[in-house]
Image (cartoon, rainbow, N blue to C red; front, side, top):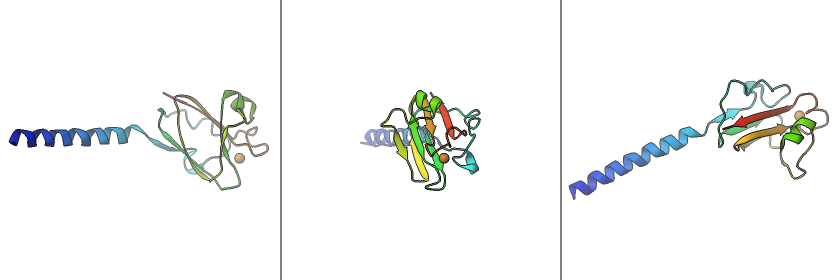
Length: 123
Ligand SMILES: [Cu+2]
């Protein structure tokens, strides 16, 4: 009986530690920091280590911009590629990173071409 209770306490402690560890694993990043989602952020990812599952928060004035998750061709050519690329428009979009390259552009006319694009590699 006493031994059973001890095991239960140990099991509970392990579960708590696991919960803390899992919670700590996914980080949240505000794209562009206080500037938010805007032009010429290509240097912003440089000092950070992104992991799959991390969350990017894109803050911008709703209607002034959007966020489109494109592939590498879309990023390079500032085009909505693939055609069914997801378009975010809330002004406070939260997007979970996948492993590998994550490419985001703004598809309002001229914005991507003027540098409103970001490419992030997640491990
Ligand atoms: Cu824009």
